[in-house]
Length: 409
Image 1 (cartoon, rainbow, N blue to C red):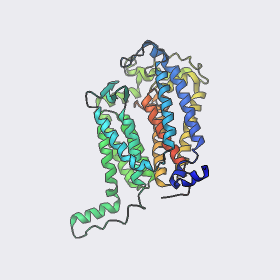
Image 2: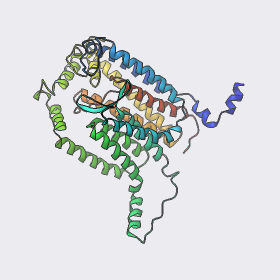
Image 3: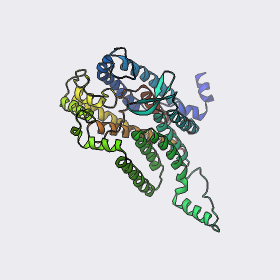
Image 4: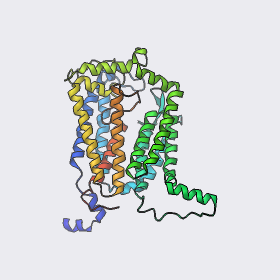
């Protein structure tokens, strides 16, 4: 009976039931487990003293850990459920995910739904759930770009024939020849998404969206000339924002010399450096951090890696960075061996997003980069962010199920 039932399945259903990539899964689960342990260690002091005015911990030292653990369980379940979905369905889902993320980001500005935190209006609260819609927008952009760009050269049909008798036709033919017309839909999507995120003054999310989108465009074979032009334009815009906005200029000045305002904006980076330096080679021991006792702000969130360095030392920090590196390398390996171009582009976008988020967070914590407000994947406190990250890992695992199948376009 089981053999007959298996024969009754379609080829697509049989492919979707293939084995998931165990090395990738093991690395994800290991990082999530270590992240939960570090959230427990880093957060219990601030939870016990109830420091966050926006959160009532009721003095429960396990408050943040229990919430993070609950979202981790939900995220792991979602990861396995998504991994069993034939990833070809993500093609048509991409439009709806992107559209939903844009609507949710717009809700940030609606008084009933929008919530502020840390001086920024970036959160939406629907019932008991509070989250940043920009997290969904990142994966929405990746899915949309991967779905459309996977059709390049194979399913777009023959080149359009423009009339050479009119100026408009000649210009369109020229723009089509250099590839500009093909990029217009992606440019429009980026302008809309980045425009809304820019109104939220969420520079870090803007950077990550641009990097993720650029990785998918690069992997799809878009001419390098457009990256040179786009990179120059993005660099010019960032330079303008940094030099012409008081907020960003102050951040750069503090990054260059945090001791210029040691009791103000420079306090956090100074305390982060103290935590990292206190760890030494082997650390002060798990749970024995001193900086988490009301010295280092955001110790269980953006700056949790500082507590990692203090408690586990340089050796522990290197091991965790090595785990991230192995996960990223394995992700790109899966992208190279994906069954079709859509699977390749999807994994490239998700892996690059995670890799750059890790790089930016560790760079900020160690003082290598100016403050960006980017969290560390699987480690920083934030239930919905963790659940979304695990859902993204589920997409990668979904593609990995069909790696053994013959290549398709």
